[in-house]
Length: 300
Image: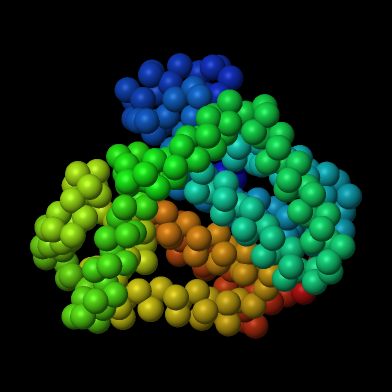
């Protein structure tokens, strides 16, 4: 219901039905929301990721519902959520959506025919979004431009800064003693930037004002040593062991990719949602939670 409400507000913003400045002043919607990028309650990167996960949950419910009425309602919600994903500016979630759907379909159906049909549908979605969604069109072109500039050594762009941070982090953490120890919680940022300034001055000029590494894996490695980074990978593995299902695989794929692009576990909202989704999967698909039922839905 939370995502459904967010979608409604997002469409109200997109179609200029509500005055966003009024609601911003009241603190009821995200301060950076705009009519061309209607992510109502959080940054578009995070909103798009959780929207992608919602789509996976809807797909799973469609395959389980026996009642045609609930299948139709879920199908409409699926279409609405997918459109909403591509009228927002969250490129991370859009890419994670593709990855998550592919992993889910492979795990769920295990048939090449289904995979090819899925590939055609996803291609159609991407083509339509690029043609009919102005923000998706511009964000794709911007991403390609950012990558090209980074190849030329110009890192002062959104993706360029992320690429630059990853280059510096890879150099730093794959060397002794930082491979084992990371940088620690104290002056980690200062030490990281000093290393960047010494070894990658061009990148340093582009990233010096960044507050974090824009990569959950490297951030954990920096703050808690390689142990912290390995623990999050083990978390994903253990989550699948606790809740073995194609949906769990798809959700893990979405999170695993998204963690490359931003720090989810250092923000209260996204951290709580991450744990909440994990709890739902465990409840629904663990041996103890198996067999829960809902209206019009098959029991496992």
